Image 1: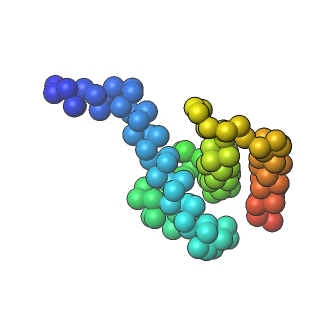
Image 2: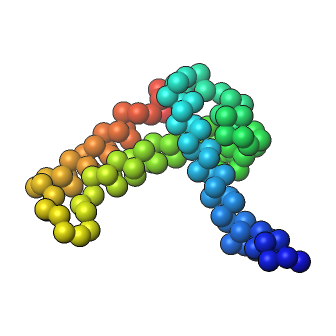
Length: 117
């Protein structure tokens, strides 16, 4: 067995592929939910746009709602990363930024959920 085949067969290789698939699904879902809204983005369309089979949504996220929640979490994480202070040699963050980030996260997670909740 070649090294590349062995790496693909290892649990680490499987994990990396799974994380890549999950990431691809979230990125495609961001676009589909933005273009069509929650109701307009069918699971078939979501799977097709991510290049995965339909059961992959159930496998990775449990449901369309689970995928939507993962999208919201992903967006909040990206915003929090951008709001985080730099690690080296820069001026300190303005007072209250952390509090605003927390309030924004709570607001976004409550308000962005579709009416089916």
